[in-house]
Length: 187
View (cartoon, rainbow, N blue to C red):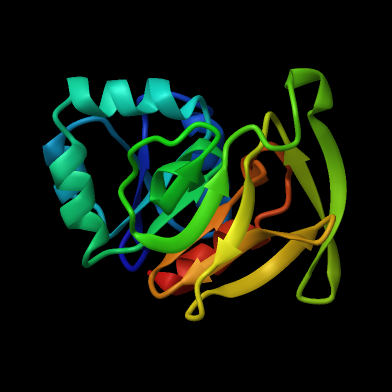
């Protein structure tokens, strides 16, 4: 494994196993992270989808809030769906606490209920990318330092800012490693 980037996947909720598979496909060594020690052993972190309020509770139970905040101040974090919500500066509908690591505003469940989940094609670097939206949030505002990589229905769905990245869809549910490869460039 020499030379591969050690990237953690927060393994408290969501499809962390599929993220680990995607990271491996993209060329990283994927490590499931559940503790402070696990977090300290990786160079970057993926925060998967799931349900953001449940994820907040689990982070609290494992006493990971402050370590995650400190990690994100110096190392890259990639948040998908609920993970994107937790990285946002402001969370709407309803308001909830977040790590505030990216200057974005995110509205929870903005596309609607579970029945409104859908698959769409978005443009990523001039090529189509399948994007799976499951009770997905919408990024309502991006700060001036952010870069929008992909949009859907006029709203940003893949954004980087500094060392961090968010996707409001689930790139781990496809066989396309490009989103995880973009994140690995941040590491």
